[in-house]
Length: 394
Image (cartoon, rainbow, N blue to C red; front, top):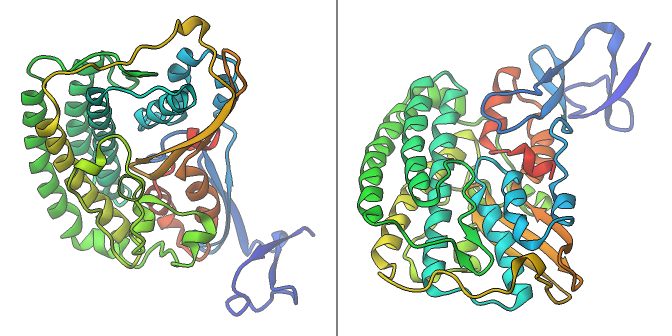
């Protein structure tokens, strides 16, 4: 006879021992262990959750990673500074530009480089475009977990329109590497602002349609309201940030709390609710879509017509940066995204460490949040936390 312990509510499972843990008899066939993953629609990358069920209810969840074997932090420590963007962007495929920004900014701070004003505006534009394409997949993707597949198809099409603009600007659709230590690779193409506005007009209609499809839909409400509820006490305990924190009334947005680039010159206010279930977390991200579209319009309207887009840098193949350490943060679509870098005066970083929301959301929060959930809601709860597994296996 084999046993293992489950942390759960003793009153619900009275056969629990004096230590407050439920003793599960695997041979009794009362409890079943199944795996969600390692491939799961809606979760960007490979991860799995080991579930123990009592009937159709989850009594324990354990996240398993290791399917990606990335090791990008160590790869960055073995490459020249100029080679870092190609590696850093792969730490989250869904929104790679946040990695570009924090890596380049770390190098610039340690090297004492001030990037030109024009480069700041273009970087902010790229970051908001990256947020936009990420949300165009994430928001309707939540509806997809409940069978609303048409919204997913709309979102994929709209995202492709944003990727068209990325391709026009950077030459790439997914990985862009347009930011570089010292600024950006070039100015905006002729007519780019006009074409970007045309794309935004199409997305305006999509935002209205998604509101009708999801938030005014009885099926979505039935599946999302009061499901996957996060306790406000978890915010500081687990380091919850971004839309998930804002759904609990914590107005945490790095762009407002610690302004960088040109965000202090833009007019916006992050949306918050006070109850974090799947419905409200999705609602917050839907409002983030509206805010992002507005910010892109503000950036295009206020951006200087001309200006230098890159500061002078030493020979990048023999660039030695003085000894030091720094931490740079930004606001990704999932919340605070930061990088810690240490240099020792050589041609490569001495230490690189990424801080992304997925580690907290995909392991600590998810494992607790799934206890007591119905098996049918597991996938939806996972997607509502916007986990990007490569960010965990960095």
